[in-house]
Image (tube, rainbow, N blue to C red; front, side, top):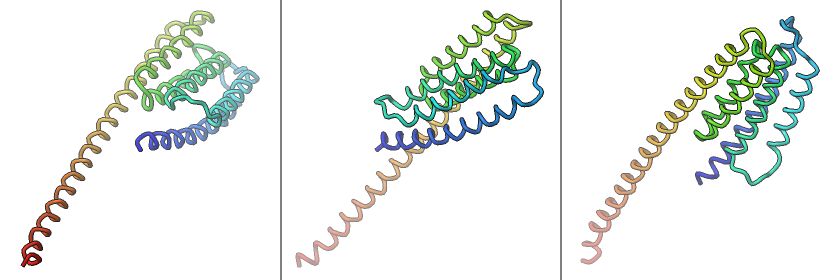
Amino acid sequence: MEMEEDILKFKRSEKLGEIIIAVFVIALFIIIQLPITPTPNKPIIYISAVLYVLFAFIWHKIKIPVAPANKNFVESVIGIIAISIVVRATGGSSSHFNFLYLLPNLAVSTTSTKWHAIGVWIVTVFCIAIEAFLFPAAQAISLGLINIWAVALVSFYGRSLSQEVGSAQGAATTATIEKEKSINKLKDEFVFLISHELRGPITA
């Protein structure tokens, strides 16, 4: 029963994820039309965004024997790679789109396991470090360290929030079980009393 609920929850989150991805890509296409400095490399952004959208929709549709958390992890890693391409095409370490690294990290830290959250953060750190060291620019390393710190902060906060929600749900489930037990006990006592009270007249 619990597994079926998890699968339904994951399917709902997939649908929501598809809507968010579509809205995000449309917003990205609109934003890069603005007079941003430095001028973004629009063809690379278009290609990477379209490829990621295609991947996400196909990834959601195919049936593979993978746990939902692992499937979400793979999608997040591909998303981070797409974000790193967008960041590179819009100014590198000083890009206005570095905040996008926060989104997959927050999503994974609140919906997946601790190890998935750490894995996604490591992939993000790797992408930010490559940008800072392979494409050096003014204050690239400092900006990279700030971005890594921000992503770590968001991941930690998301994980803490997820644990608090899990604890609250666990407490609510325990309270519901205890309430059901007490109701069942009252039912048993009521049936026992009724049967005891009726036994005398019937015997007579």
